[in-house]
Image 1: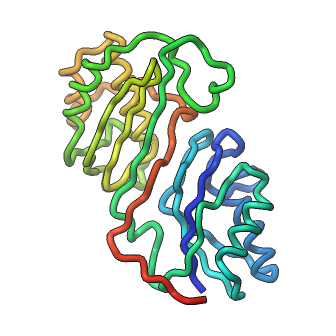
Image 2 (image 1 turned 90 degrees about the vertical axis):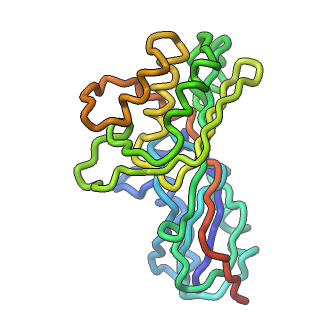
Length: 252
């Protein structure tokens, strides 16, 4: 039986999302519990994508297959009990066997939080403690250049195995709520550290260290300036994942 699962996690508790030897990861902790449910047989969870160490998620999505039959509400209850409140399963539903959490993804939305007020000790793992004023208008102007289909080679972590670095940003908004800046980016896909590089670039503009017109250069592969600032992982959240096909529910 194939299941679709939506879950949230606190990235500060893990050494990233992807399973790694001798490291506590989101994927690894979930698979430990599912292995017990599946009578000791390993279960691979296939997510919509991976997040780096320190990155959080509101609604990560993944599918997995179980050999045993179990009601989805019972499975959700068991997972939430065993995952020690560091991961929370929002819902689990049976899904048709040809559904794929990664390849059927239509788009994703990430949010990034920046504190421009005094240092907040208790939120240091949950937003960038920038603690300086930023010019929101300049950042908004610069962000408009990034909307649309572009080659984001210069705004991602170098990956020789990633041949296609073209992505389409469908929406990019920047708001300021009493000194907490929220940057929301919706795209058909994201490259590794793409959001954090974009945020770092926009902060350079908002701080006055870079002119807004200069951002367009980072969409030109012939441009060879790489010393951009990468925003810390603690402020990044995977907010939502959408799919291109209707979800066909199976009866357990």
